[in-house]
Image: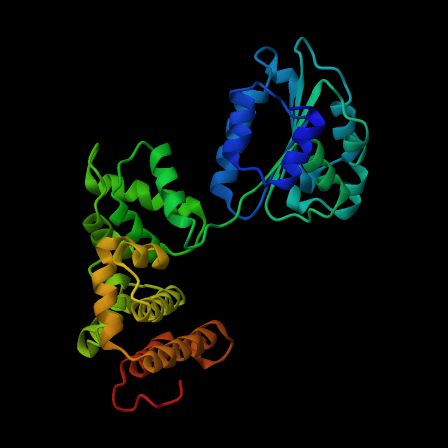
Length: 356
């Protein structure tokens, strides 16, 4: 494939970290620009470290690797170094960190980089969210390789957890991954990596991480867990749900995390009801819900016990509770009261018609 055709192919398909690594490790193809951007820091840092190790010259690296930070950048200084010849090495590596903090004026000042590329210099740029409409970044992506790192959501999170476990050489059961997804929800993978480290210590060196390990360590290893609370609500167990909510609040669990997990649970029960009406088979149902078949019987049982109207009412109560907790009114300072009233509406206790 010609360089022009390869460029068109990259433009059509978004590159992954694995694509960049394969291009460099297997083909030895060095791009003039590497642009790593996006909110997800763990994957971005992993690829950044990998690229620095492979792009820096094997000799005289101290003279041919220059690192700049966007918030203290002097654009002309970077340009001067970029267009200078490397010292006793075939190429120079120029690194620009924190590119999301680059001002519009400095972004414009760096455009000579993409107007007349230097054959003996490689540029590695990394940062959080950036405006890819800016000419500098758009041209870097066109002429080189750009990877966006997004926070993984439900459909991508299991794969991301499994990948981190492989990187750390940890064995983890699919059921444990499913539980970890339910407990953590969409979040930065650095937190997921930390949770896997904690689980590996709890399970023991060389041992496989099981679903029970996740249950026992959820909520920082405390007695009550959010899993238990969602199950109690799904089963309509008023007394147990009240006890678990009280314990979780005393343990310091954040309502801002409990509410989304309860909402997710009710949404899954609604989806289960719809799939049951369509008489979808077991394995297909588990795939459609994005859960392990191991957990499907529990969801099916709970979905049969609750009417759809009750689930929708529960979602409305949770949405209202979320607004109160995150807002600037009294609810923000009284999360226990908000959660108690929310639970009353979820479970239909006497007085559950009270407006939160």
